[in-house]
Length: 393
Image (spheres, rainbow, N blue to C red):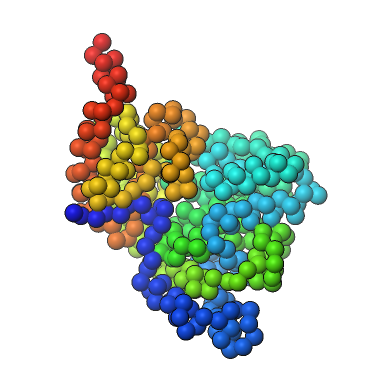
């Protein structure tokens, strides 16, 4: 059976060069970076070298890079850390309706602590209108968090305009760029964001390695209290191997990003064009043009995403139905509902995410096996039966 992995928005494979870079720090170079002896200093030097590589990928300064364990931790760190440092100025926070659960839940947690939260809507493509953010701003607004790109529908948000707006109002701006960094160019210096979250497993790095970028001069409360690691901002013994792997993945991404985009985008466009031709009643989700180059997402009417996933998996095709953090919840995606899709249609979501190694033959195989799966599932669907009966009236 042919194996085709199309769930790279959940995680990418570890790049061979990343693994090679990590192995010494899982074996002989096992020292603690805080130790003063030479073994510890070898580990410390490796951490700082990785910090420089990540900073170069973002066009940031090394001192602005703080290593964390995941994109979710970075998002929690940004929202809660900024909110508490700014509380004397105000208590109002803004985020969009399509943010990752780690942003949504952080905001809900802050609400319980006395902060006020406004949620701005999105259009049918999942796009935030900067005017909606402008209308939501208040005198006591201290923080706006809008993601750079949505992992469920691929839409790239107008973060540049929103960041400029926040800067003009002296409001901190954070962007969840987990789905973006390593896949499209990201320049924090040009954009002027105050904080940005990224995760290594989105661009061939190891799981458990992530970063929060915090602009120089911006105060943020530590998210984990304890030791002096990460400049006193994030306590705990450093995950040296993971950090080294993240640094290597960042270095490779700088060299290969243009090539990766050039290979993935034509395959993505082909899938977006041909899948609706092979299967009727298919809705493209996300913006048709302003979207991640390796991302194609759809809703298939009358059937559920989980059933399609399982049937595709039996054919050797791995994909997803929304965010990896919510895929087991078996609920309609909050992103799709915010975009105006009804519950029944939102339940039929599929996300195909590609990488450089994805081939035309992989797409051919998907387009060959998927239509019979849909046909078989629709025969068992009461929604489809009802649709056919109403069409015949």
